[in-house]
Image 1 (cartoon, one colour):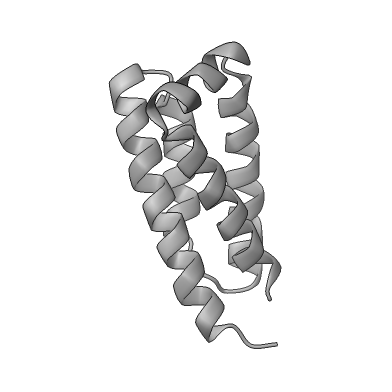
Image 2: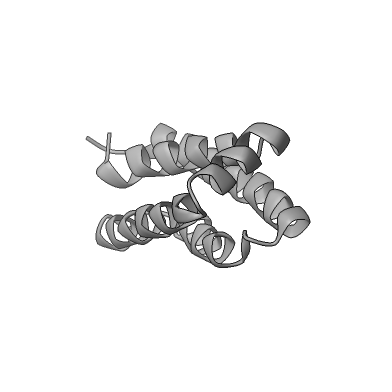
Length: 100
């Protein structure tokens, strides 16, 4: 499995966790919104590996945008949900076509 595909799975699952309405929101608030900074860095690292390994970049770019605007409660939830779906679908499609 490519590193970029593994990172797409990891960031997709993390975004899915943050998209859980009370649990994800409570986690973000309890960390003082630093969870969004960590996700920004993870998405940037994933984007780097996607460029390096010619993997799809849409999910990582959307994740970076989500990390920047997710502090807005309702909009953040929607963006986490959409980003998680895009990342997980992209990872599943890339994983099935990945060459070893």
